[in-house]
Length: 291
Image 1: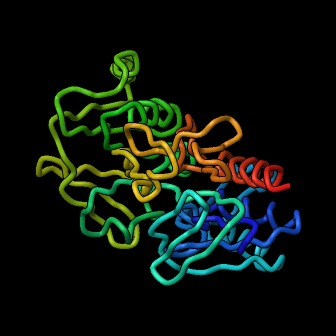
Image 2: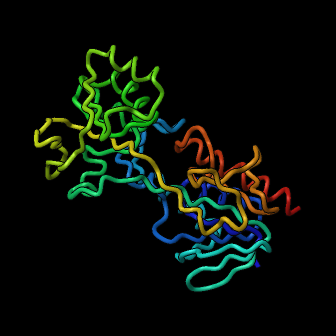
Image 3: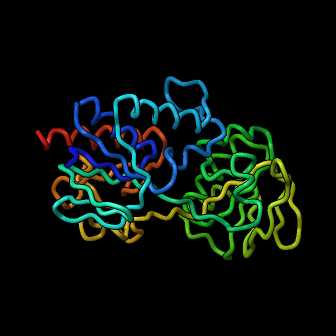
């Protein structure tokens, strides 16, 4: 029996563990891959309050070590099910908890092109607000057709030299007002009915191939959606149409004692700062409920 079981060792999950341990609760963190979540791939973080700059790896490692130093328990196992009586079943064991926090995050939908993984942090990014300033006065491209892609293009157009917005269809799925704004931007070029077919460059991104034409860019922002991994929890939580967990303002799910934190839940902004905020809120409310 653990006081608190946290599923996911990204910033939200690690922050929740930190708060639980500081309240003298027994905490188990279950993670199927590596600690840190997506932030561990960030080459440089410059928008976290109080820290001028830090690599994603160093940030995640510092947070992980904080949890270890407070005697947090980590097990790298794949969770397969949660029961209504707060039993967590993995591919190796079963654990009982007084409270559970689901902090499994999301996976960025990728282009699945050769060289993509190797160029992450070396020209390829999935977050314009996180990494846009690294491309000041440079040429970049964005691929996507929803509001995220349109908003990211508007944001980057005020920072970079030129933005190529690439979409596979002939119309954008995002709001028309954003499209109109983009059409009035002199440094934005819209490329419709098109796909990126190759990513060129060895140590850094040098160009992309679109419609058999190479376009020289120093950065590519991929905004084709995120994929939550929540279907295995649908017996204890409600999911929206995109698969995100629905919570109340205190981050409770529909099941008493089960919470969700971070990118895995329905929210308007998915950033490092909101992830750690969620972790602290979920853990604090879980502790109150226990006591």
